[in-house]
Amino acid sequence: MIIYFDHSATTPVDEKVMKAMLPYFSNTFGNASSIHTFGQEALSGVDKARQQAADFLHCSVNEIVFTSGATESDNLAIKGFANALRKKGKQYKDMHMITSLVEHDAVLETFKELEKKGVSVTYIKVQKNGVVDLDDLQKVIKDNTVLVSIMWVNSEVGAIMPIREIGKTIKKINDKRESDWKKMRVSERGIKPEPIIFHTDATQAVNFLNCDVKWNYIDMLSMSGHKIYGPKGVGLLYKKQGVPLLSLQKGGHHENNLRSGTLNVTGIVGMGAALSLLGTGEMGEASEAQKNNNLKISKVRDYLAEKVLKNIPDAILNTDITNSTPSHAHFSLLGIEGESILLSLDLEGVAVSTGSACASGSLKPSHVLLAMGIAVEVAHNSVRITLGKNNTKAEVDKFIKALIPICERLRKMNPLYKK
Amino acid sequence: MSYSQKVLDHFKNPRNQGSLENADAVGEEGNPVCGDVMKMYLDIDKRKNNKGEDEEYIKDIKFETLGCAAAIAVSSALTEMAKGLSLTEALALKKDDIVDDLGGLPAPKVHCSMLGVDALHSAIKKYQLRIKN
Image (cartoon, rainbow over all chains, first blue to last red; front, side):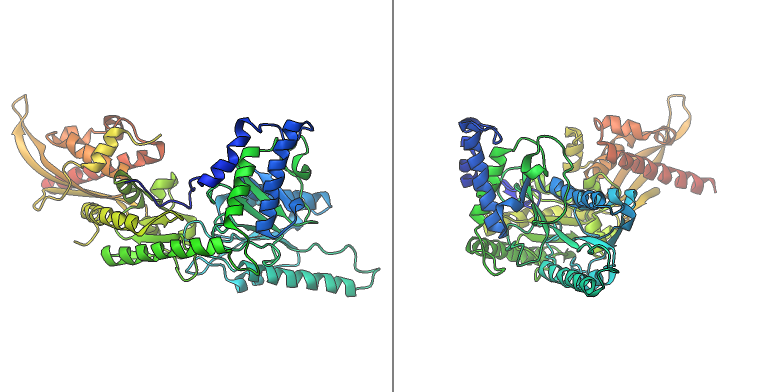
């Protein structure tokens, strides 16, 4: 039996999603920008998907920009926004931006690029459970802060960030900035201050949480199709009406001139179908479909966490299951290097992931685990299990049965592990 | 580049894994902060070489390793190569000898082969220093 426990990396395309996509490969193959019937049929598939995305996010269809995935969306949101401010006359050196130490590289590397151009960036730390502290964030907001980008759910440990609270805090600051400005004499106040824009990479949140952008005070949101049982190579950026943004990729003026390139019709249709399967929740609550999945997955996850801690000595659960998505169970199995566990499990037909350096090609283990205060040598011992909607307790039993002798074998080999 | 079949074979069925209780020489390299630790145990004996002179050689060798699949495969392959070699021959082993023997290693993993050679050489050098004194 092959067991897939790596849903944070990617998910299989749902059969219903695939069914929705199939006609768009060769029957309805037109270019969605063409005026003729072929083009218009393809466009109607895109329009439907755009509506499905807007329904899920509780926004207008005009606020959706289709991209190639969350990495592109993050790049577009952060750099496109900085470029737009520059066009309005603000210099890089006058921009301050805030993000966290546990973001995905798509966000971190983008900020590093802006730093080189002169933007000042503050990377806030996280608490032991991987969650950003709202007070820490508030403390570093300055008069020249123009952007805050905080991921919704951490991809490694599954920690859920207080997105709505962050959004609310930023809105309050923006409201104050504006009212202070309005109180000043017209002759003295100069141009209206820029509000702080709040961006979130919601890639790992979409499956499990209500991502209502209004309820959560979000200005820009990135997501990807393949993490939600949709296809790879497609994602979107939600951009609230009025948020300044310039395209990074130039060309045929697609997507309101924000992202040129022939639309990936099959991918977009697939992502729309995947979002529609997730349903729409009201008042910040998860949808019925999400609730059902969440309950099912968390039962399997809690069972797995309990079994690992009971059957494997020196196992540490790094995921705070009181504040995480139901998918994640991240462990450190002391005295065993993560890649060795991953490969041994793979030989037994179980696919997992690790934050150990040996698996990443770099010399340092995962920046997320280090930011959580986990010691380097313990971070090397990490195994990430991310469950999906089709995993079962029977699979967990097989996994545990494989894991016990693997841990014994690898620990026996370790010269430092107490025997 | 992914792991060769030979690396996976050594990882699955490591040769000479374990320790030697009364080892004549022990060498250890790496540390858990880097993620890899290799320890080599050597039994050293004397024999006549083909010129009829006395020489010391590795009669038995065992390893213990904390690390990734490459680190374990390197340790295992190295013990196979080193077993039966004279100390002079063992000291001449280079990291590339192991990498070649394993059918190559992914670029970020080549440092593992260095660690194995270092552990073997450090065991022999410590032994030679002890005998000299």
